[in-house]
Image (cartoon, rainbow, N blue to C red; front, side):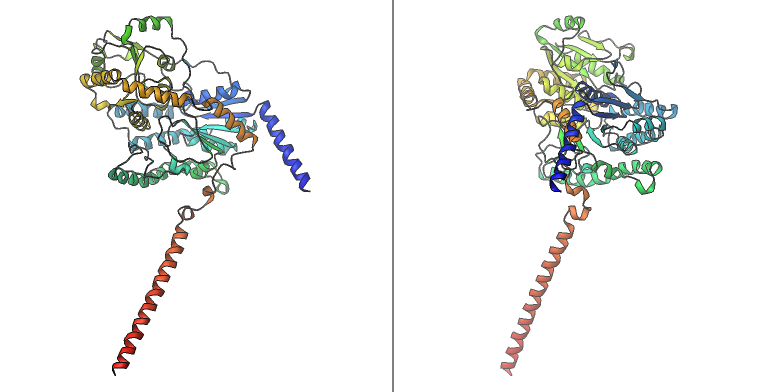
Length: 525
């Protein structure tokens, strides 16, 4: 009987391996534009190029990438348009909050508002019955979802597809995932601390660590309400449960800049998926760069979704600062949005879109001025280019704290930018060779990894498919109630035992003292 069972298991494993070699059916789900789409597109292309049958389910038609011409897709795409109401709401959020971002007001409240926008869009997504029925009938082996938008978990549950969660940034959601995060040396998201903290910084970090539980619960509650409306009561998932059911969590980070921290077996770090050897730039751009001579050039880009700056005063200060430096400046800025009457600095060239990775790999690049998005940071690390950051929102502050901690660059808040100090910061980073040395050191760390990120991605996805899921990687703590995870029952038991022993000892001592005094009184009498 045992031999027959072993043969059946072996046969099943061989069938799964052959199936995977022939190409698995994989669905990628992307409900956010900008750099999120670029990463999910990269993942889809890697899997497609290695023989898998890939389809993407997308929500935003243009990818929210102003100035970028999306190339033809080698894989099929299922997409739909938001209705006019929600599209206006989505556009209004980014229009209004761009002003706030450039004023340094991109805090937790902005994040909650964004999650509410995603929740409203999620209602539309969950009602796309024709597309969802079609995708469900396709019987995909696995889904890879953009985990930044919690709606992707609800969609995966609706489609009853096992899924791998890809998180495009750092460990912002570590607490929700159950990732060990000792506040003594692991900075809580938004704390803007390094792993080397003073007493007061550890106190701050601990309080923020506790507060992050409350913040996470408030965000999850938004999407749990959606689950109540779209799932029957007897099979209604909570977002917390869906996080724990992910076969694998993949983070777009690398320890070349990320602070070292404990991980779990099902947590994979493959930062730098879009960082690659540079292709030659256009001849027109090459001729412009050649004019810079030994001074070289700097590149300025504040993210895939920001094509121009909504604050004219800030544009004037930056433009004036660029006029004070000897380098050429390639600035991703929509020319039609340039402030009327403001003369462009003679050493500046505006482009609607820049081939960022290719320009970072150019031998004459001297500095990247960036908002600090994880893709930009990882490409700068890959090519060993120093960074001057202008953080606006989300994980950008954390990313630039890490860049500064590694002595690979500096950062300056938008509200602090004046022509003189901005120009001085550029001159300091370019003139101080230690920044370039540190950048090259981090580049060596990133490039010399045993396996490049695309191979890690492919290998782990195929492993999950062949092994029938990632249950062997997930810790049992996911199934434990919270009081067991924190050993509160054990602590209560031990405390009770200690209290009982102390009580008994005190009773014995009291009894002995009583008899001693009693005997003494009898002798005296």
